Amino acid sequence: MKTMLAIGLMSGTSLDGVDAALIETDGEGHVRPIAFVGDDYTAEERSAIRLAVNCALELERPVADPVIETAERMLTARHADAVDRLLARAGIRADEIDVVGFHGQTIAHRPDRGWTWQIGDGAGLAEQIGISVVDQLRIADVAAGGQGAPLLPVYHRALCASLPKPVAVLNLGGVGNITWIGEDDALIAFDTGPANGLVNQWVEHHSGAAFDVGGALAAAGSVHASVLDTLLDNPWFDLPAPKSLDRHDFTDQPAMGLGLVDGAATLTRFTAETVALAFRLLPEPPTRLIVAGGGRHNPTMMRMIGEACGLIAEPIEALGWNGDGTEAEGFAYMAVRTLRGLPISFPGTTGAPQAMTGGTLHEPRTRSLSL
Image 1 (cartoon, one colour):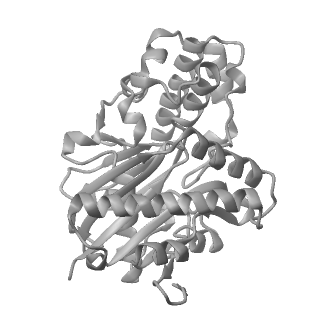
Image 2 (cartoon, rainbow, N blue to C red; image 1 turned 90 degrees about the vertical axis):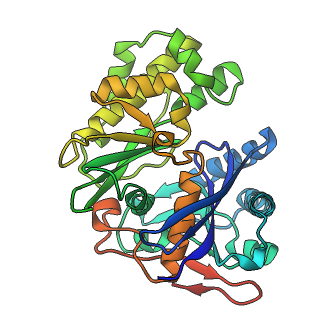
């Protein structure tokens, strides 16, 4: 099957910045990463997104709001800038790119209410960069009764094609999610719980830093068992897979009263224990645990996950992959699958009633077409 050049764009719930990745793929077994860039948000941009998130969480359903529209314009412009930088790094012209997969920024995820909300103007982005854009990749799945998340499992399966099975890929973003791939390439996937989100929130509130650099704060603290038990006492962990979370479904309130380092240690251990709880829902223990996402840069979190799960947590770089670009690459891959009518979500990954494609295609200077 003919390959395509595709760009993927990702802005996660950790609110750290925009990732852009360029790959060559056929949307199936062939994947060749070409280039990657990451742009950090400024404090002002991060604040604008937080205001949009806070606004969205107060709403019963997505409706127009000036605060959210302001954040959306900023996000779209930042993603256009990331595409320009990526093309310059790769030495490739915009007219050589077949499609861009644009995740947008999740500001609320409410599949229980029949909606999920990722802001970002796909049509406007297509006009700014002069490339076809596929966005709103979660909408069709949620409309059909699925969770709309996680979506990366189909890409994880492609990356793990040559590995012995079963294998698990753990993504540690603001929220954690795990993909289990069986010997017959069967997919089981679901959110595990807060990953970096609560720890980042705690560290920023108590120190002003955006995150726990190198896990140093958590490494210097002590885990408070009573607080950890309170955090883990949540019926969500007993729900069967597939299941998904909004970044704000959990809070760091049980840790209030702890100092900076003890709170960081306890919340980091909480993340590790949620992964161990997720292992109980897998059909069979994985032989390897591969970790992508920003959390793999936190050696304290990685060590705690290994201790909790009884399996070494290996950063995805151990397999020669770029862990910073994995999510963005995945949305490039899914955009190609969308163009080809291939499914991006499955009953075992999102709870969709059947394997489903999804997304909205925006062609520059033409009207958008819902797929």
